[in-house]
Length: 339
Image (cartoon, helix red, strand yellow):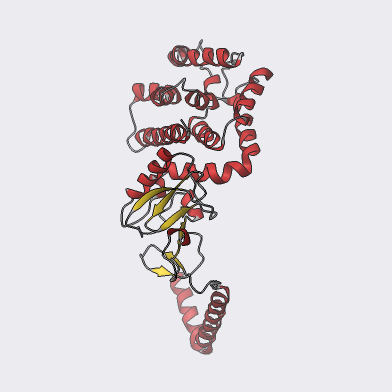
C-alpha cells in the first residue's frame, strides 16, 4: 500500500514538473512575508545614547523584545552612574525555565535611591522585576539573601528554580498589591477543605493507625487555633471537608486582611504547598517550626512509606520539593520582617 502511494506521487510529479517550481516560489513569498513582518515589528530605540540587548541561551547579544530573555540597558556614554542602567527579569523567570547565561561578575546590595528599601546590583545594573519595577526589598537581610541567590548562579545559565526568595519577592512586590482581594478569596475558598480538618476513619482497620497519629500530632495544633481565635475547628472523615463555624472563618479572613504584602505572599505559598492554611498561619505565628510543619503535611504519606517502602524518583523528590517550598517561604517571611 505504501509503495503504491509513493509510485503514484512520483508519477504525478513527473506529469507536472511545474509543481516543485510553484512550491519553491510560494516558499520564497512566505519567507519574504515573514521577513518583512519581523523587520516592521523590530523595536526602535527612542534614546540614541542607550541600547537594549537580549542575552539568549547562546550567550550572544541580540536586539529583540522576547519575553523569555533578559533585558539589559547599557549605561549612557555620557554617564557611568549606576542609576542609568538596570536589568529586568523576564516573565519566564516566574515559570522556572533557564533564562540565559550569567552576564554579570559581581553582585552587591545598596540602599534604594529614595531611601526606602534595598536594591540588588548586578555589576552596574539595578535589578528589576518582570514588569520593570525596581526590586526594592524591605530589609537588608532579605536583600542580602536575594543577592546570594544571584551570586551562586552558574556561568552556563541562570536557573530561576534555584532562586525561591527572588520569586517570592517578585510575587510580594507585583502580584499581591494588584490581586490581594482575590488571593485572600482563593485561600478562604479552600479553607473548609484544609488538610488538618480531614480525619481518617477510626472504625476502619486500614486507617486506624493513621487516625491515631493524626490525633497525636494534629490535635495540639487545633487546640492552639481555639486558644488563638476562640473557635476550635471541626474535623471530618471526608476528603471534601465540611463547614467550619462562621466565627472561625471570619477570624482567619481578618488575619489575612491585616497582613503586609510579604506576609501574604509567604502564607499563600506555604498554604499552596501544604494544602493547609492553618499550617501556614501556624508557621507565620511561630507556633510551628519548619520540620514540624513538614511532618504534619506528610503524616499520612510517611506512614504509607513506612509500610510499603519509598519509591525512588517519586517520594524522595516530593519530599525535597516540599522542603524547599516550605522552608524558602518561612525564611522569606522571617527576613522580610523589620526588627
